[in-house]
Length: 263
Image 1 (cartoon, rainbow, N blue to C red):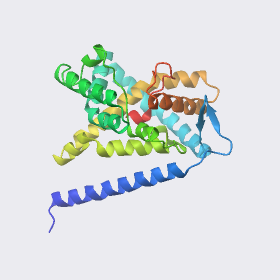
Image 2: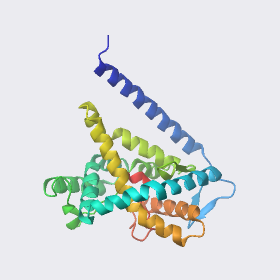
Image 3: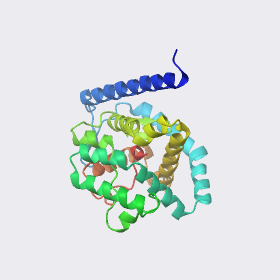
């Protein structure tokens, strides 16, 4: 008979296989998808939004949840944790993500970027108290966000359909598939699951979500107040931001809209 540990391992393996198959199916759909008959332009970027009616309904739902639940939680977080503490949390989470960032830099063929990831991880882990302080950034080795969605873009995979997912928000089929791969491959996830500390992993995911929403709240409020069509403004800004990240451009010149795929 299987003991509980063996059953858990088998179940996790089955879940992992389902996840991998789902991602492969997503990538197949991305590769086969075509732009809409009337393409939407954001600058020189073509946006494919065949699910716009559905996406707008989900977007309205998310906006209502933000106003009723998420933003009050974020405001409470800001009231309890001062700005230096929130910056420390963000630095620590970025440092934990170093293995995934490194893997994506290597897969994209960006060896200088990979070197910077290693230097940042070593310096911030040893001198920055486990990553709480961005000592490497202060020395000119800047943080560069990389994920598998960007890697797929470098490999020539198009965005595919634009998607708005409940609670998570705007992205594309390609970038959500990339997020699934990053989450599955995260060494922190594997380690904590192997030592039966799954609650720690989910705490990390919760902190990532809280940190992301804290970084988004003011940007989204400003965008909403200055936009005639809030949905279209978020959609265009998302694509422009992702395009800047894929090209390793200075994102300060791109719309200041952090990617949901960073979490």
